[in-house]
Length: 79
Image (cartoon, rainbow, N blue to C red; front, top):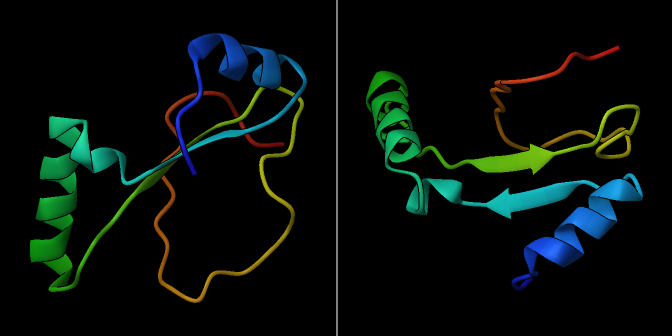
């Protein structure tokens, strides 16, 4: 892991790569509140990841997760 400049990220997105942010709730107050509300609702720890995938690209290869996952898509569409 590490940091990349916006120029590097833009270049990789232009090539169809997906950008992933781990634990963005540490940087976005509204997301931290949402995670906290979900923790109270489900009586469980909640974390988050954020993904940005260009149109007509596949973000991740098919896989399964060994944890419960709630997906919230905020833009675009799945085909």
